[in-house]
Image (tube, rainbow, N blue to C red; front, side, top):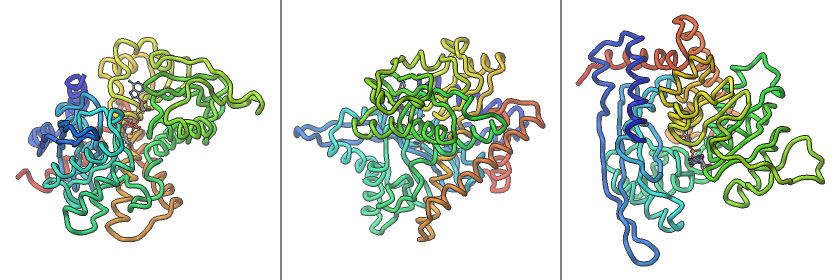
Length: 424
Ligand code: NAD
């Protein structure tokens, strides 16, 4: 899978570069990451043994600013996957018009197999190994798949200890009490929900049904805000499967019970428009495969890469796909969706709110001024709307898909920066 994913990201880049008629020298620069680092992280286990985990940090390009991108803890993560994700970040930061380049990190580990103390040692061990290539003006990591604000708090603390100075701007996605910004946790989901709401502005939200794959940071907040905007979120899922109710789910309740249980509650659900005494009730459970092919208006893959492939693309019944995960659609599936007239809102636009929120947090830490959540959400919304409108205008002007338009906008900015700065 990782190699397939790497090809997928490279193909989207080459397609965009071709459309832009990119300067071949710039194309050559952007094909390869500037720096890749691979290391072993020995973690003392609670039982007295030591396990070593493979860690990666890839710095793809910094023409627009310091490298920026999350760290994932995920089984099977390897250099090929992290390189592809780093390239996506370069393009995403350029599309969102941020003064950041692209990077990414990862560890090949199942975070759920570790105790809390082991997870802390692994998080600190990652920073110990990558310390020489990190920094608030050089490379700024954030959370991604399998990592969360607590993990980032440990990492930021370890960075400050090693730097010998409080350096909160070295990491984003920290909890508010550890220098984080109000709103960062919800930023990716909120940004995606804003994009869909703006895209469908002439539709009556209550008539629009949505299915969301993945109920982690990104999926749960996307579902929460779509529900708040009045959309009918009829299905959500996590790695163990999903729940469905045609009335739509009360996402606030689902989230409350997920927090209590530590995972999505598959045994019962809280449907909307249901008498209070009848809730919770047993809901039909569905597999992740079934969720992806539900008869809904909008499908939101918000879990893993490659969820939509040539194996299921013909069966997808949604009219719009909002890509909240990174790379959830293979090029083969993308071609099928294009042929079938299904609208794709690409990952680098749909989930760009995460890195925009990270930028605000970084600015807060650099300036030493605390932002309010209201200020955060207002500026995030403005940024998402602007990016969507640029993509829509470009798609119309060039007669291309939204993915191609997003790449055209981003690659054109990157080309200008690289040509202005030089190649050395
Ligand atoms: P997370 O670990 O918080 O949540 C992942 C969710 O996906 C969980 O509900 C998990 O159970 C589910 N899942 C895992 N494997 C699955 C499978 N095989 N089938 C169905 N569901 C599965 O991760 P996240 O931070 O929400 O990230 C999800 C995606 O969004 C990733 O592709 C990530 O790169 C991307 N992303 C994250 C951010 C961010 O700010 N966290 C920003 C942009 C993009």
